[in-house]
Length: 323
Image (cartoon, rainbow, N blue to C red; front, side, top):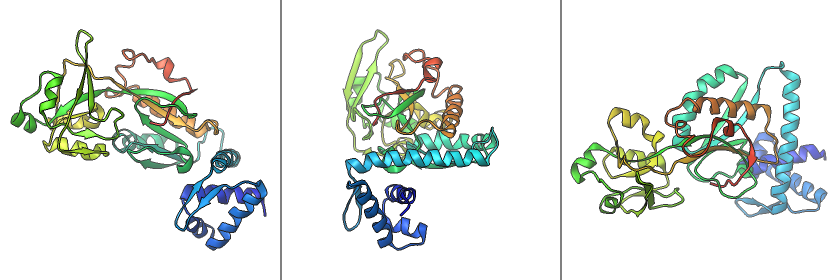
C-alpha cells in the first residue's frame, strides 16, 4: 500500500481521536482503517498506537512519527497551495487554539479584518481554558497566557496581559472595599483553578514590598467565563487578566480594587511545534495579531515595564511552554 496514504490515515486517526471518524471520512470500514495502521506499524517495525475498546493513545514512537508525518504533509500541502495560488495569496486551513475568554474577546472580533486581508484562509478555532496538546490536537498555533514551562515548543512573545483585582459595586456595597491585600482573607474570593498559584494572590506596593495572600471563598472554577459571570453577579472578588473585564469596567458592572498595588503581569505568547517550520500562513497570522495587540491598551502598554520591547516581540526562539 502507498506509504503516503498510510501516513495520511495515521495522522487523521491521531487528530480525530478514533478510527470510526476516519472511516466515515474515507467512506471505508473501521476494520480497513485499523488494517492500514497495522500495515504502517509493520512497515516501520514499531508500535504507534496503544488501542483499547473505546480509545487509543500514542506511544512515544507514535508521537515522534506523528510530528514527522504532520511536517511532511504540511510541506506537501503548502507546495500544492503555492502552485494553485498567485504569489501574494495565503490559502488553506489554520488550526488555532486559545483560552476561551481570550478567543472570544481578542481573536474573534479581529477575524473580519483578518479574513478581509486573507480571504482564501480558513481558521479552525479551538477555545479551551485547559492545556491543549498541539501534537495530539493537530494545532498549528496556540495562544498561551502566563509563564511558559519547559518544553520543545517554539514561542513568540506578542503582548502582556495586565492583571487586576475586581469586584462588582453590589458586592463592595455589602462587604466593603479592601484597602490592603491582606484584607482579602476576610472576603469571598473566587479562585481560578487554572492559575499556577491557585489561591495565592500576589501584590507589590509602591515601595516594592511583596504581599502574597492566600485567599478563600465559596466558589472556584476552571472557567474564566464562569468566574466573570460570578463576579458580575456580585458573588465575590477575582484576580484576573484585566482584558477579560474591559467592557464590564467601562460599563460600571465591575470595579478595580487595590489599585495602589501592582499585580504581576502575564506574558502573552503564541507557540507552535518545532518539528514544523513556521509556514507562510502561520507567519502572516501571528504578524497580524501581534500588530493588532501592539495597539490594544488592555494588552500592550506595560511591555517596557516588564522587560519586553517591540523588537523582542519579533523574535522566535525555543522556550518553555506547557502552560
